[in-house]
Image (cartoon, rainbow, N blue to C red; front, side, top):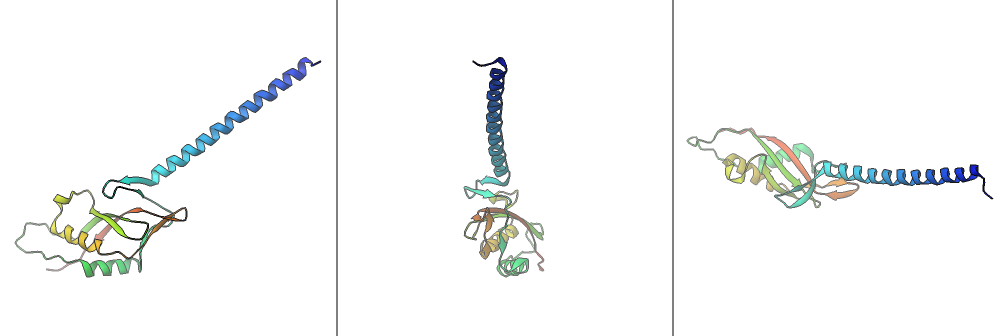
Amino acid sequence: MKTIGSTYQEYLWVINKLHLLILTIFGLCLCHSAQGQQENNVTKYDSQTQQKVYLFVERMPFYKGGNKAFMADFAKFFHYNSAKDTQEPIQTKLRVRFIVDTEGHLIGARICDKKTNELTEFEKAGLKALNLMQNWQAGEHNGKPVNVLITKMIYVDYRY
């Protein structure tokens, strides 16, 4: 025969197990939601290349040889002939955006905040030079190569 005290203790034990189960499920859902939120903050869909790209990763892509090699190669490939009678404004910087894919290829190069039909000849020459620069080391996320979106300012010093 059960006493009132033992029935009450069994009741409390069942309630505690239910609370533990609810807290465990809630914790798992919260962790999954936080992981999804974190993933959404570092990735986006790039409409130009139609690929999922990372904005920030543990190991960002880099140009083999470093920034000095990047600028030397850019200068080698950059060909811009400005005619003195054109109405094009003098430019000395390019704000570019591109993706370094999982193979280390530069794809989807563009000028930030400009449509293709709005590009100056200077910007077109800069994009042409940039597209020739394929000497990249891919970025990595969780130890795997991933597509990474890069935004870079390139300063050009040219003389007439």
